[in-house]
Length: 91
Image 1 (tube, helix red, strand yellow):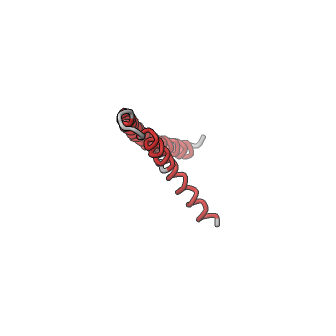
Image 2: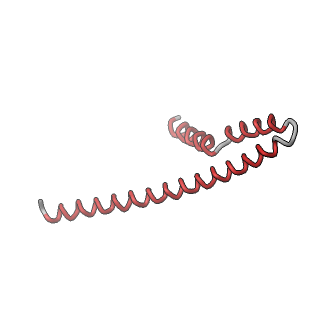
Image 3: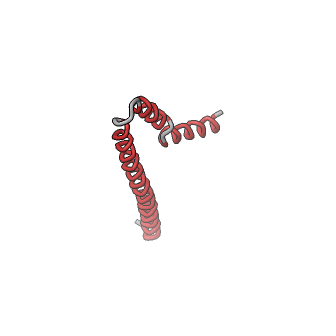
């Protein structure tokens, strides 16, 4: 193989590896943040559930609050934004 071509391929592989490492780091940071938020949400939900046992009718309100939060979760918002972006591009 020509040394110039070999050098070019090695440079491309190095750049792809650095690009891959950069994105893996970003996804790892996002996953850590998601886990922290999930842990905090679970802690708050546990506190609400313990409170609901002492307040009459709170269980019904807690269920309604949970349904609302699920409907407006980040995943739902992100999916809606994604769909809106696709719709704007397509037509």
